[in-house]
Length: 116
Ligand code: FES
Image (cartoon, rainbow, N blue to C red):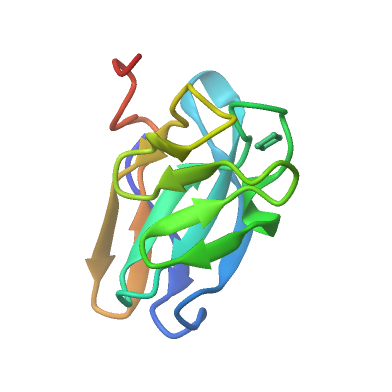
């Protein structure tokens, strides 16, 4: 599997999110929160909060962090690391690339798969 086109660059405004289901390894579906951070860049993070298994795409974007709507944990969109409790485990993030106006995500590559 390679990077998949998931959006056009102008589809989201900074601070907006979009929930995606992408084809993953072994034919599985991978739930992804596509986020346009306040720096204008797109980030892809697994849509499931590592604390309570709820959808992160329903959270709030601040800078380059995403805040879970349920208990307020914050995650760095660049690394998936939690930056605010109660979550202590990272959330997988995926590389985002651009091809012209297209935004591509590769869910075969987990950027922080080895973080603890
Ligand atoms: S479910 Fe996300 S912080 Fe608790």
